[in-house]
Length: 395
Ligand code: FDA
Image (tube, rainbow, N blue to C red; front, top):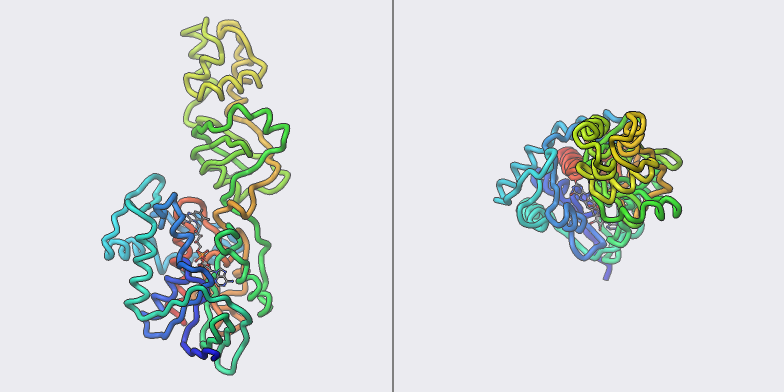
């Protein structure tokens, strides 16, 4: 028997954005069905923030988002703020803390956020169908018809909340882009974002002894820079500072690494030369940097001998090797490990207040599939909550 279900709203994708949208629409009295091919909802929430979900950032504002139209995200972000999400978290008595840089994490488990969203959906009366493969999506006389492995569903408003392409192993499909193409909506080219950068074989071999070392750094690309930890890995470069800059970096570009950006290494080396001239440059540098890194940089700068014998020019060369270090990544680890997908549904095709497609009445796109991508640090979930809420308010 073929199932026929009719509702006001169908949300495809039970991730962060889809569940928030379903909650708001159901609270407003809409009949809402959420469909997902996965066996559990909110899988990316579950693995996020090392299992503790960095669920928002108290500094979330338009400047922390990348998009072809940097103004597009303003309306939704203003109408559902980090405080609004914190209020929901507090209502559910989920303990949280600020880790650093405004990033809020659960004290216990990311699963608390999933349970909260499911409880809210249930309380509002939204229905969730998991393990449901989506087939064709068609226009019907009064909305949309969605064919699925569990039969056909009909609705007046259809919300696409299926995320981006990152981590295909977890069920990312690019479904949203297919639907956009079907309805002639433009796309901004997609790229992996918040992703480790890789190095060519020769550079990797050069840096092999640094694998596992982490240091505070500022990583710059053009005028953009991020101060967080840098991690050398056996594939290349990672750590929050690299993930941040990866969203700005393009193939063929250099990045500039400034290790220990809060310390003026040239001044440190000059002072060390004065106070302890018999010390080696490597030892002096190793007072600030991890020892293996100090050794590598001293060798790379071609510096040997006692501090007392080194000219200021040589000390500047050594400081520069650490604080003005140009590296050309060969690529990125790609969607396999990227936390987000840059690009997506062109915001020019959507109404920024409602997330509705301007040319297809009743069709909405929310969350990561839209060309709005946040920095690392809770910004992407804030966009998912805010865009989901904006659509839920209007449909
Ligand atoms: P999301 O991907 O969450 O949900 C999409 C849903 O659609 C999924 O349930 C999926 O199964 C379903 N779906 C996909 N294709 C389908 C199809 N064809 N048919 C049916 N269903 C389909 N962000 C942040 O702010 N703080 C953090 O701590 C982290 N940490 C983090 C860690 C890791 C490892 C990753 C990969 C990502 C993060 N992120 C993050 C990013 C964050 O997870 C991401 O931005 C949001 O989950 C996006 O929410 P969406 O609801 O748009 O998509």
